[in-house]
Amino acid sequence: MSSPSKRREMDVMKLMMSDYVVEPINDGINELNVEFHGPKESLYEGGLWKIRVELPDAYPYKSPSIGFLNRIFHPNVDELSGSVCLDVINQSWSPMFDLLNVFEVFLPQLLLYPNPSDPLNGDAASLMIKDKEQYEKKVKEYCELYAKKGNISGTISDDSDEDESNDDVSDGRSESSEEDVAGNADP
Image 1: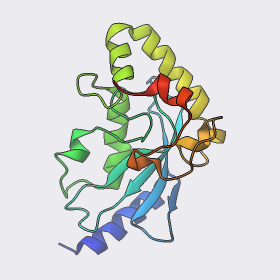
Image 2 (image 1 turned 60 degrees about the vertical axis):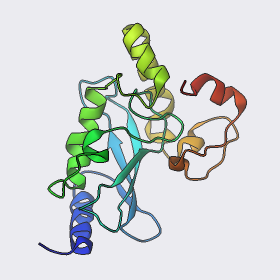
Image 3 (image 1 turned 45 degrees about the vertical axis):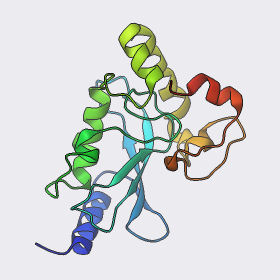
Image 4 (image 1 turned 90 degrees about the vertical axis):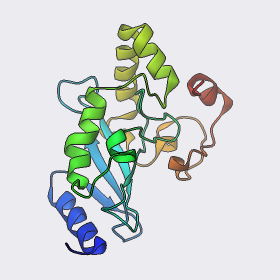
């Protein structure tokens, strides 16, 4: 098999030649932002998210780091950092998978079939279990507020009316107002 660097180049090129909008960060191929549309016939249909992809040096033997840059209300996505809880990426990754699998299979499956029993967003998981109708309403509200073409220019902090930091929020160290955190912090 080819070296990890050749495979990384091939996978990034395949993703760029697909229907996804791919923006390399710092003129390299180890970090990318990718526009991702919510799956058809899901609560997220019509939504558009910018996904941050970081490829480790050992890719494809080690999984990519995947995170939402604009807000999404989902039990398995941390609302403040955008981190994704997805077994196939975090635990059972295989070199057989590639970046197209992430965007054509894994992320659509995550949005179609949330798992409230293993949450990163406790509020979303609790609401999904206790009041499905309110959960669905809040998902659609977030799609309208944060997942439209005009709202995905940068990161989660760019999508808020609050004065927040523009630092990389995927590390979980987001600066935000007390009002913003009080309503969204996981228990």
